[in-house]
Figure (cartoon, rainbow, N blue to C red):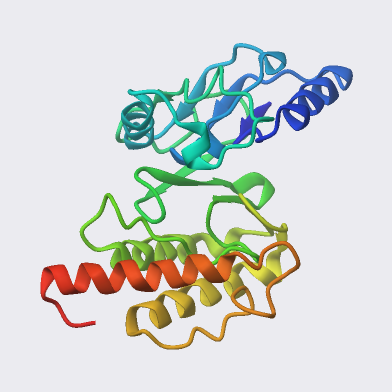
Length: 242
C-alpha cells in the first residue's frame, strides 16, 4: 500500500502500524506531500519502504533539517517521534507519477504553502489527497518565506486543482475532514475567495476564521492576522501597493 503523510503523534503512528500488520497489509511506498515537519514523520513499525517527495520538497526538507530541529521552538509535542524525520528521497524533477505497482497516482506539484508541495490524484478511485490545502478548518496558509509572489503561487495551485476537480469524488486534506464530490469545487472556491480577500485586505467572511471556527481551531484567526501583517511588511519593503 501507499502511505501518504503517515501521522504525527507516536501512539497514532504505532496504532497505524499495528492495524496494518493485523490486516496483513504492508507499506510499499511512503510519500510526503510537503517539507513541513508534521508531514515528514515515520515509525519503525511501518517498515523500511522507500519514502518519496518531490525533488524540491526533498531538497527543502534536507535544508530545514541540516542543522537539526529545535522541537521546542517549533512547538513540536514531546509525543512526536523524530528519529525517522525527513528521511525522504526526491523523485526526478519531471516525475508525474508515484513509482509503484499499485493504481496510478498522479503528482500535481505546485508552490503554494511550501516548496515542492504536491497533491496526489488517484484517478481510478476518484481520490484527491490535497496536502495542506482544501481544508474545512484551515485557511490557505501561504509560503511567505520561499517565494517572490505567494499570492499568485496560491492562485496557480488552485487552478491546477480546479483542473482535476471534475474527476474527484473524495478530497482528503492534511488537516480537517474528508469531503465528498460536492465539496471539491466548493473548497477550491472558498480557498480562492480567502486568498482574494487576503490580497485585497478585505474581511474574508470565512467561517474558518473568528467565532464561527470549529472548536479547537480558534487559533486559525491568529494565523490570518499574521498573514495580513507579513504581506503588509512585504509590500512596504518592496514598495508595491496592496
